[in-house]
Length: 193
Image (tube, rainbow, N blue to C red; front, side, top):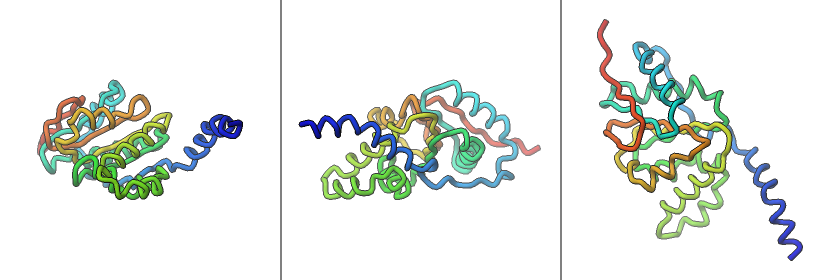
């Protein structure tokens, strides 16, 4: 019984030590060719102002090829040094799978063994997603999460509530889809001047 009390007292300290081993960049952060950002200075300024004003997920919206991802890359590369933890999630699949099948994220969050333990579970994706989100939620300070190319499945209340990761995370989402529940900035075509 006495050993259990000691273990309980030590848990916060052990956890703090483990957090210090989590790298700043939880995933690979894509680079950007700054020449591709020309003409988006006004959008960049407006987006940065809005991101700083809201605690909601922020959406960069527009048709395919208009520059959403490039602008998000520019933002993350411009400001990544101002954040304690940064993650870039590419949603080429659905939102949960984008987190669960991201080996960099799992390794960075020190979840490899825990994920292995639940691999045979029938609700593996849901359990892994919850595990990842809960671990990210414990990362305090000022953090940035970019979710690129999100689909409509991100709108489901339970998922959206989970990825908000308040109050420590700013979340920026890019999408072609008109998504609800976000503070949004619509990118339009550039003028040919």
